[in-house]
Length: 164
Image 1 (tube, rainbow, N blue to C red):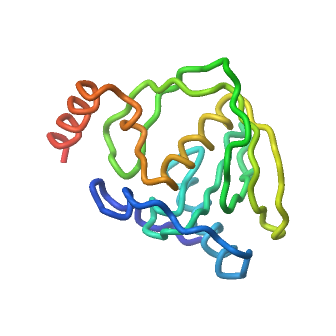
Image 2: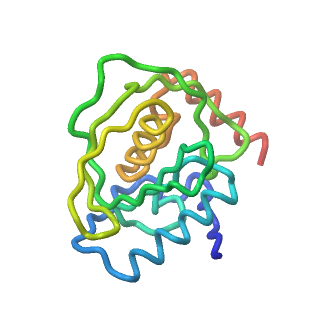
């Protein structure tokens, strides 16, 4: 089990768009394994590779009640998002101690390269959908607080600064 350190905000890696993955290799599988170990140790329901300093378009999500159901994704992209939204209290291990309620589509249809190096389409609903959207934001160099108004974002970042 390898739990990796999450980069502290405002590390520049967290603001860069991650690089696409061409093929699934043993190295990629090892990164996913470390990401799952790190996600479980937080505990969390998802993690994107840039959060641990790896600037590749890799993400893992496990919103199951029993755990151990992690979906490994390379180059995830949203093909369709529902018009119905759901609010969820979101946070990030990269900026501990703060959180905010973010409104996101309740369901999404994704396309991604899976652990078998096969392009897969999958629908995710509820917390699964929220988590995968949060991870894709990380892959695009965005943080959850970027979805807040400027005033709320500034307040959240000031609060985080005081907690450090």
